[in-house]
Amino acid sequence: MTKADPRAVIRETLAARQDEAVHFLAELVKVPSDNPPGDCAPHAARAALLLEHLGFAVERHPVPQELVRANGMASCVNLVVRERFGAGPIIACNAHGDVVPPGEGWTADPYAAEVRNGTMYGRGVAVSKSDFASYAFALLALKAASAAGARLSGAVELHLTYDEEVGGQIGPAWLLAQGITRPDYAISAGFAYGITIAHNGCLHLEVEVRGKSGHAAEPAKGVDALEAANAVLGDLYALRRGYAAIRSQTPGIESPTLVIGLIQGGINTNVVPDRVVFRLDRRIIPEEDPREVESTLTAALSKSAARWSGATLTARRVLLAAPFVPIPGQEKLVAAIRRNARSVLGEDVPTHGVPLYTDARHYSAAGVPTVLYGAGPRTLEEARGHRADENLRLEDLHRATEVVALSLLDLLTARA
Image (cartoon, rainbow, N blue to C red):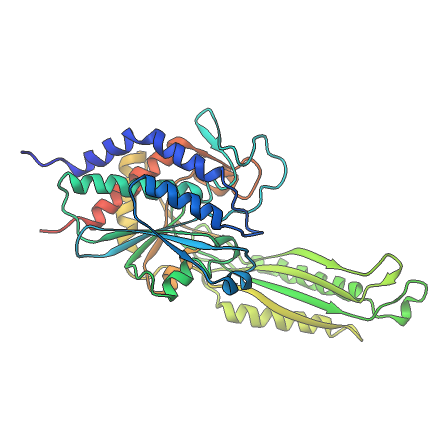
C-alpha cells in the first residue's frame, strides 16, 4: 500500500472541515469574555466542551482566586491540550480568549458571530478567538496525517489562556512558572500575512497628585491638585514630543509612545480639588531597557511636581511588560512558516515587529523561541481589533490554519 502524502492529507482534512471550523469559532464569539470585568471561566468552560467534541483531552487549570483578584479579574481557567506523536520538541500554540469590551458603533451584534459576504463580525473574532480555531483544526489535521502514516517526532500543545488584556501574568506566565508546560518552541496568536518576531514592551503607571481642599470662594487657602496635575500633564506631553527622535531599528516599530488614558479627581464644583489620579501608557521599543524607562519617567514626574508648593506626587507601577525580542531558534519557526505561507497564500510573508505587547513575550522571556502567526488580515486596523465591527475574513481563517498545520508537520517530521 502506498503511504499517503501527509501534506495532501492535511489539505483534504481541512477542506472537509471548513464549515465545522467556522461553527467552532462562532460558538466562541457568542460567549462574552470581556476583560474587564474579567469573568472568563464561563468562556473557558464552553471552549473546553467544544474542544472535547473535537476529540481532544482538555486539561483545565483554574488560577487561585487570590491571584485572579490581584490581576483585576473575576475568574480565570487556562486550558491545555497535549498531543504527543513521539520523542522530540514540544511546540506550544497560544491564543487568548479574553477580549476588550465591545464599546459603541457596531453595525452587528458583537456576540452574534454574524457572517456577511464571507466575513464574520464579533468581538474577539480576530483577536484572538480565531486562533483557538486555527490552532485546534491545524492540530486535528496533523493528527489525521499521523494516522495516515506520517512519521512525526515531538508534540503539539494548545495553550488557551484568558488574561492577555491585563498582561498575561496568570495565563502563559503562570503556566510556565507552575511547570505545567515546558515547550521548546511557541507560536502565539497573530495574523496570516506577516510573521511577528518582535514587539514593544509597555509601562503602565498610576499617578496620584495630592493638594489641599478649600472653598471655591477662597481658593488661595487650598492647594489645587488639578492645577498641579495640569502642569505635570503638560510636561509629560512635552516629553512625548521628544520621543519622535528615538527610532527603533525593528521594521514595523517606530518610536516610543506615551498616552494618558484615564483621569479622575475633584470633590465638587465649588471645592478646590485635593486629589487627581491619572494613568499613563508608555510603550517601550525593543532597544530600550524597561527598568531604565520606568526610572527615568518617574524621576521626570517627581521633578515636575516639585515645582508646586504644597502638592505631592506618587507614582505606582500597574504593569511593566518587557519587549519581545528575537532569540536563537526563532529562525526555525520563521523558515517553516514562510515556506508554507508562500505555498498557501501565493506570496512572500515578511517578518516584522509591531508596536503592541502580547503574551508572546512570556515564552521568549522563559527562553522559548517564539513567533506570532495566525488567522487574520494584514493589519490590526483592517481587522478592526479593539474597535467596533471587529471582523475576520473566513478565507483568511482557512488559509492560516493550513499554513500552521503544514508548518507543524515540517517542524515535527522525523528525519531519517
